[in-house]
Length: 339
Image (cartoon, rainbow, N blue to C red; front, side, top):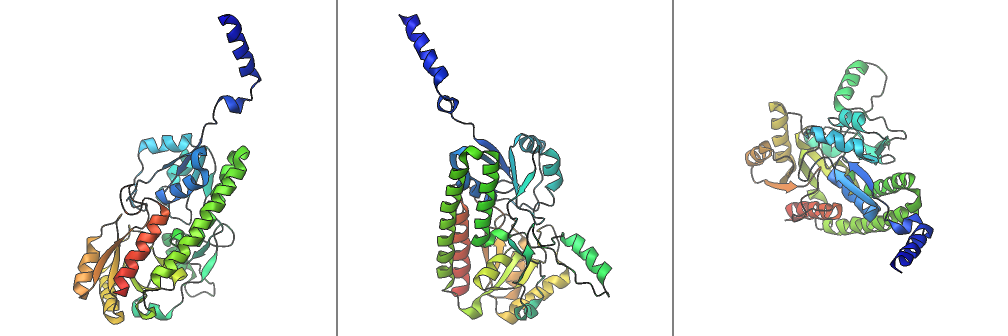
């Protein structure tokens, strides 16, 4: 009798579709940053297993990969990168180790050019116009490549293209493009769940639209003449463009935290702070630059306010998700400038 029962069980197991016998293994996804990882998890849900290379509270510009990172990338079915030279120090490792083509989640984003703020004169300039859409018509060289191009073109009639600002996620509308690109990449790798990925992306984009309006309300407390920013490095360009702020200076006059300011850069920044009446210098959790505190002290009654920049926080801290990250940063900026 037991033998007959076993035969019947085996018969029905053979007749059942394979997907009812075992749950599909999740897609193995590697991202460069925790910000991209969070969006990928929202789009993929339980269908994906997402790992970020750069840990929480870390500076992507200064991240040094370990040998095990190459193994992780090599085993991934999808590798998601920001693009626009954010991962310049990581790119060789990622390209060489990956067994699949990289997915640039920022493709299609209207990118801004890097405009080194030049003191009070920056208030009269409009650096908020995009240079094009990444992967479509935007020419995005690195800052070093652009410096070489500027020297080559000096005195000619050619119009140089500036290095693109890679910090696109400071505008929620750009992260909605991330979500759509990620859904498309997941669907290409796992067509049987394409409808789920598309629905998840649409639901997440609705949250991003609500977040955008929430931030508009938060910033309404900041008078127009107080919407002036000084940052540790040039990472708030997209926030400034989208929410109508002006960046008048940076401690590190670069898109990367690896650059070093000159004494003249520091003097010019202190002068810009005095001239414009800036209330705060916005530093970064991932890059605790002591020079920001020194400049704030030398400039007088200026606060140092810490923001999240290239990374999310740990789960028990203030910015464990992208939505939390943007809310925290917006409220910190508003509190500093509206007081």
